[in-house]
Length: 107
Image 1 (tube, helix red, strand yellow):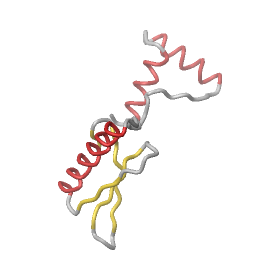
Image 2 (cartoon, rainbow, N blue to C red):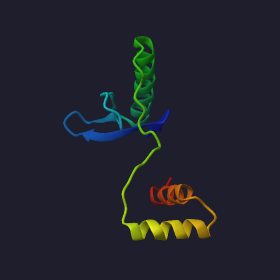
Image 3 (cartoon, helix red, strand yellow):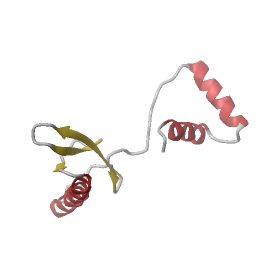
Image 4 (cartoon, rainbow, N blue to C red):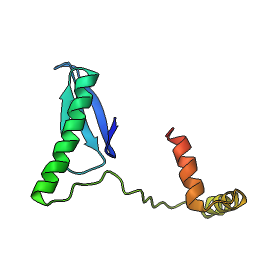
């Protein structure tokens, strides 16, 4: 589930027979639950909205799930091949890698 750039990790609690969710990608602990998909989705939206409201009220900035910056180290030969392929396609390495990752993540 995704809402306002926040992503939820959902698990099923077999004992209580409910879906339990937490915001993924932040250190703050924000949880919610529901016994149906609609309840879960509403609780998710409500939790994100409450988290943002509390952050604003307290003056403590809400954590953002991901910045969009990704640093990685790769083999120099792979780097050279990526540079060549992206150049042939008329794209920057960043544009090319971003498109490849989007396709791989099925976005």
